[in-house]
Image (cartoon, rainbow, N blue to C red; front, side):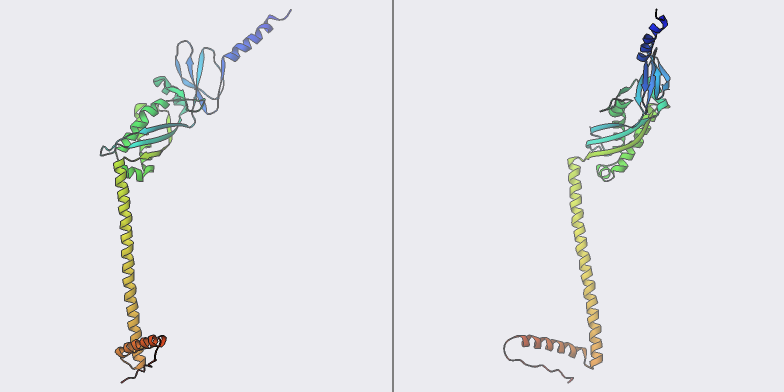
Length: 273
C-alpha cells in the first residue's frame, strides 16, 4: 500500500502553484487581502511570491507615456489655442506606489501593453490639462510658437508642482520629459504671424538694397579719388595742366571712334601750347 502522505503531495504542490505569482523585473506588486481588501503599505519586489490570503497587483515602475490631444488653453490675453498636444513620459517611485494606490485606487492598463500603472487617468484628465492651461496663460501664442522648448519646460514645472500639492509625501511620479508635438495657432494669430513674416522679409530686402547703394557710393567715391590722384600724378610727370590732360583724353577717345568708323581719318596731336 502506498504512503498516504505521498498521495497528498501532488495536491499540495498544485495548491501552492495556484497560490503563487512572479513579479517581473521593472515592476513592484501591491499586496492586498483577498477577503478584507486591505492594502499593505509594503511592496512585493521582483521575484517569486506565495499568495495565499493575500493577492498582489503588479505595477510597472519603468517609463510610461501619457498623451493628451486637442486641448484648447487660453493665453494671457484670453486668446484660445487650437489643438495643443502634450506628451508626458513618467516613471514611478516604487515604495510610494502602494501608498498612492491606498489613497486613490487609480490603477489601469498602460496603452498598448499588458502592464499596469497608477494614476494615468488622473494625469490625462486633470493634471496635464491644468498644467498646460497655467503654462499657456503665462505667455502669448507668438512667443509659445517661437519657444516650444521653454513652453514644454514650464508645463513640466507646473505639473510637478500640481502633483506634489495634490499628493503630498506620496506623489509617486518622476516626470522624465514633456514635449509639445502639435501646436496650432488661432487663424487670426496665424494671419498676423504671416503678415509680420512678410513685412520682415520686405524690410530685409529694403535694408539689403540700402546697403548696396551705400557700397556703390563708397566705390564711386573711391574711384573718383583714385582718378584724381592719377590725374595729378600725370600732370606732374608730363608738365601739362589737369585740364589739358582731360582734353587730350577726350581727343584720344574721338580719334579711336573715327578710326573705327568708315571715312577719312583725322590724326589728333596735342601740344603744350
